[in-house]
Image 1 (cartoon, rainbow, N blue to C red):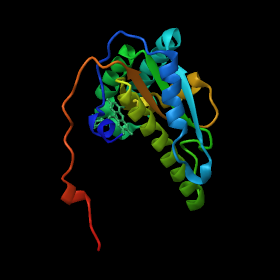
Image 2: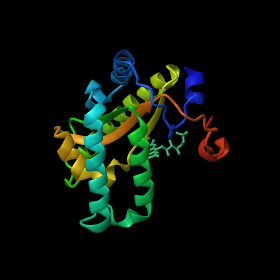
Image 3: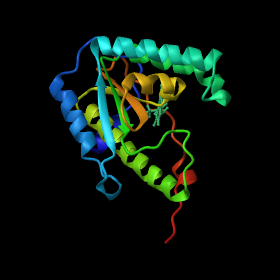
Length: 197
Ligand SMILES: Cc1cc2nc3c(=O)[nH]c(=O)nc-3n(C[C@H](O)[C@H](O)[C@H](O)COP(=O)(O)O)c2cc1C
C-alpha cells in the first residue's frame, strides 16, 4: 500500500485502452470500504463512459461557457476557466469518469446551522476518503486517475444532467496512463508537522 501512496500521480494523458468492468467494479468496492462518519456511507458513484461520456462532456463545456458569459457561480475564479477547459479535454481522453455524489448533502446555496455544517463536513470527509481509496486501488492496478473539482465550473449543468439526489462532490477520471509524471512538489515536513511530546 505504501508504494501505491508514493507512486500515485494525477494523470492527465490517457491511452486509448478500455478498463475492464471487473477493474472498475473493484475500484468502486475499494471506495465503499472507506471509513465514514457514523458509518453513514453517504456516497453514490455514477459511472459514465461511452456515449454517455460524450453527452456529459458537451454539457460540461456548455457550463463553462455559461460561467464565462452568463450567470457565474464562481465569479471570483474566472482565472481558472482556462484550466477547467483543459480538465474537460483530459476527461475526453479518459475511458471512464466516475461522479461521486453526497446523498446526504444539502444544496450548495443552502444556509446551514453550525450543526448542519459539521454534518456536511463529516460526510464530505467520508466521501474524500472513499475517493482516495479508489485512486490508490487504481494505482495498484496500473490504472491512472485524476481527481476533478473543476466540475464546479459547470455545476448546475452537470447536476441537472446527472439527475441524482444529493450533492455532487467530485468527478474522477480513470484510464491507463499515457504519461509518467515526476512527483509534484510537496511542502517541507517541518513546515506542516508540529510535534508535541
Ligand atoms: C479535491 C481535488 C480537486 C482536484 N481538481 C482537479 C481538477 O479539476 N483538474 C485537475 O487537472 N487536477 C485536479 N486535482 C489534482 C491536483 O492538481 C493534484 O492532486 C496536485 O497538483 C498534486 O499532484 P499529484 O496528484 O500528482 O500528487 C484535484 C485534486 C484534488 C485533491
